[in-house]
Figure 1 (cartoon, helix red, strand yellow):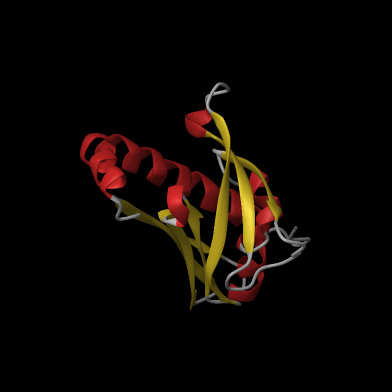
Figure 2: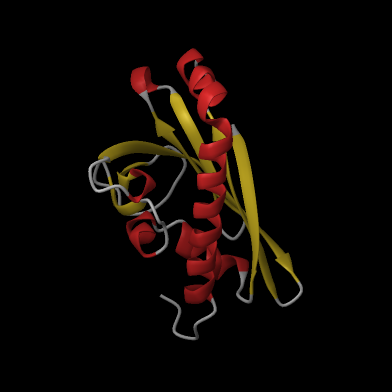
Length: 156
């Protein structure tokens, strides 16, 4: 199970990267993850740094939980990615942002890739179409919200 969405933003890759890599602001952008916090005394992104996100799955008030995440790519102005850590410390899903300078701004691609465990392969077999559609719709909404902030003169 995987998917991606690309949105062009009239802002520099460095500015957009500063928005997507500051996980404590995710609640401003994401339809599902409404807050996040750095872990282990960290205050910013770097490969290996952990954070946790507070998720309201599918916008349902009754399905709320925390996820632990680990940053897997962190190249300012270019890439930011993290794994959501599942049972046994395995990746349940990888989320990534790739930024490419284009013309007057930046093409930002948000992607997700489900992990490879047997349980996730079974989940994918039953929920692939509906969950992929939900994730794609949510990524589109997330990127449009980031675009609003990125293209505002004052930024964030």
